[in-house]
Length: 331
Image (tube, rainbow, N blue to C red; front, side, top):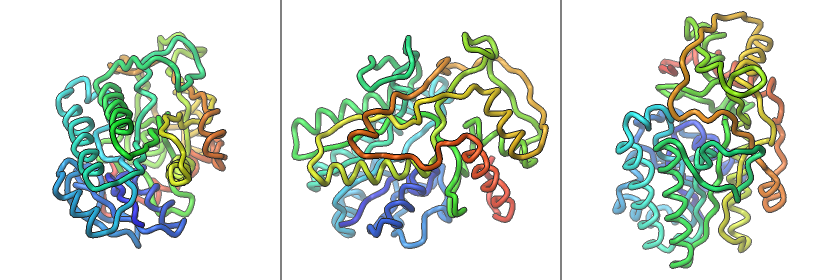
């Protein structure tokens, strides 16, 4: 009764592995370490270095570790890079997911939790964004995730298999106990970058675009604490194990903050008035993404415990300070 966590040496995957272990489950992490770190794999989890697109390897892991469910986090996540390198994103996020799914079906895996994104919606005309909104991604990253969702839906019809695809909004923060946090080699998340700037890891940061049709001209996002998100994955697995039907669910708090508001919160919590430049818009960045989060609360009984921007920022800042004691590049 082991859960296979692909990408479990990365940011969200390592937190999900912690949540599973905290709940008494056995965990095996599969990660190729191109983005993650070996030290980020939680103590107590088995670890295999390799690629989730290697079907033979995945089958062996499932057999060797008595895997009964998969949580799939592995993939490429930087939206602007996906515009520049679209084929790389389709390989890492879609082709490899197809291979993983094939190995899962061949091995009789019945429960699959997928790390999707609010990017599948593109630029909706209204907020909050509900799960029945049209899927119109505006970046190869969003399209690659949408394609995997469609593969999951088709596989669930054809096989004895069910899944939950969790559509993340903006994930931030770190484990409150300091056991895990964001250590991306190429960080692009706003709270991560602002925290690095406040703690001196970066000399300054930039706001990308101040001409959006929002109150202060900057993009608006729904920020969710990574530990609340990790808990949502555990609840999604329990839902499937109880016989729940396949579904897609938004993961967010249902309210948004602008880029300027987030920077203000980081300055307030850190007590540091750091430098912020202005830059052109980045390709593929929607104006506003705020979750309609009723479905996940109703179906999973999900109740977030860190729904406070300053709490999220505090945990992110604490993590950045802890990284200074580690011999690792978090930039």
